[in-house]
Image 1: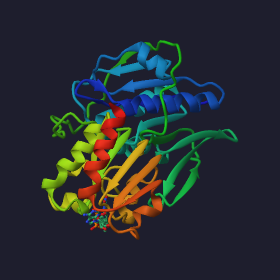
Image 2 (image 1 turned 90 degrees about the horizontal axis):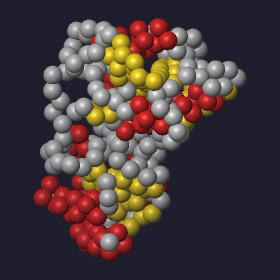
Image 3 (image 1 turned 135 degrees about the horizontal axis):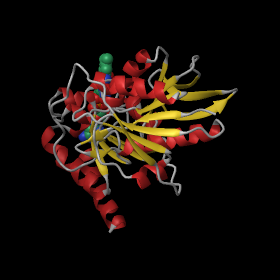
Length: 318
Ligand SMILES: Cc1cc2nc3c(=O)[nH]c(=O)nc-3n(C[C@H](O)[C@H](O)[C@H](O)COP(=O)(O)OP(=O)(O)OC[C@H]3O[C@@H](n4cnc5c(N)ncnc54)[C@H](O)[C@@H]3O)c2cc1C
């Protein structure tokens, strides 16, 4: 039986969906281990709904009284609460902030971590994590030796538990960190974050110029909840912001649908999107490596394909 602490992530006073997925992953893992307790920890003040977190899988929610995010303070709070509750595992989301916390928490607990996990199960008395390696070319199963294990959960691989339960609400003091985040320069616009969206329309150098991006935006508009993504070549050219970059040095995405437009499929790009459920590639070069990853491929010029595809999708969605 393994008790699990999930460190929640909030942004602009709201709980991120990736955190509900991490709570769902913890619930499934705790149940698989024989029925442990799941505690969700908010390391800074926020109003949280006991029913939503209870339904997602948390038995208890603990809110720390910090007014702003502090990476080292949040990690220290998580380490202390993990010690107080005698938890056997700490889960975070594999987001930018989650990555920042992961190593700090593992160091604080003097244990190892498994990053970017896509599945968790319980075998021979231990949690076993599945995670991609070699830029997504292989999957490994990781077991961490030690009394406490730490892991981050990749978005769109786990779901909230969806059970009828309400979490017990409690508070705790926050550890004071040396660094305080005073503001976050977020992306503009109303589209979801590329790392969390269920649908991603991603563009590469094949779009030809920043001015052509309206073609991708129209396609994304036709797909409810779609986010925009980009290759590094595009970001390096200044066509799109780095917050949209998908790949080894950008964000990792695992949407239900990933549409790669004018992207060659370099290994560093594949590292960030190859675990997408359905991949559609549009490229004028039928030999482009992206087609080896694609579920569906369209060989042709983006300038001709995109308007037709967008119109066809609009007709279906309407
Ligand atoms: C350490 C390191 C880290 C990196 N990290 C990343 C990363 O995080 N993300 C990332 O994406 N890359 C990353 N890269 C860069 C990567 O190697 C590639 O250079 C980059 O992904 C190429 O981007 P692209 O596919 O948009 O451009 P290109 O490779 O130039 O491909 C453009 C494609 O568009 C097609 N095309 C051209 N015109 C049209 C048209 N009119 N219609 C249809 N198709 C057309 C071409 O056939 C081609 O396949 C990294 C590289 C290194 C060395």
